[in-house]
Amino acid sequence: MSESEQEKNNETESSNSFESILRTINDTQNKAKLAIFKGILRETIPIVLYTSTTYEPFFAYGITSTSQVSYRTRFFRIENIVNSLVYLSLLCPMDVEGNYTDTKHVPYRLEKTNTIVIASIQNFCSVQCIDPKLVNRLSINIGDKW
Image 1: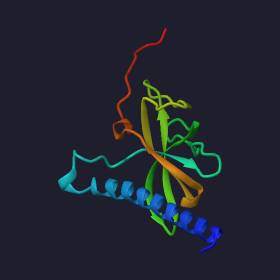
Image 2 (image 1 turned 90 degrees about the horizontal axis):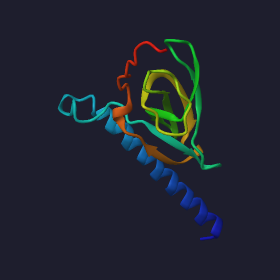
Image 3 (image 1 turned 135 degrees about the horizontal axis):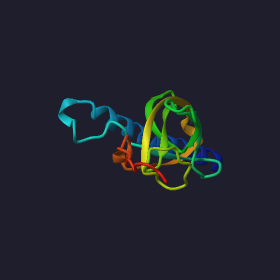
Image 4 (image 1 turned 60 degrees about the vertical axis):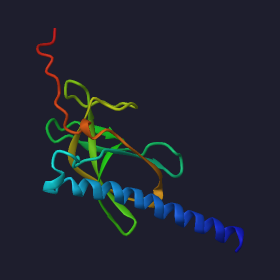
């Protein structure tokens, strides 16, 4: 087997195992809907995907449904995987008071949205799972601001 054939096989194996990881995350989310797992598994496992070209987090843009504010996020929920395409819903990063925050760090909470992006699995090289307890976590009401 030539070097180029070996590299192609390695890329295919890597791509298949990465897709397998994404499918496992998606399957776990789907199992959370079953009565036996209620309260044990979370219906959303937030993820950050890293691009194959820059090894940086993948970002997408959306508009909040409540205040119509545009936002940028690197946090997603896997909705489906079909033919090496991953369907991702955007999770809007929020601060402790419930306002959108553009941060490099994990935010106080993540708000589920209806915005979906579709991307090829081959565009990504790794995935990072984030604590599911952040999804729709209650904001803290600070009260009147001075």
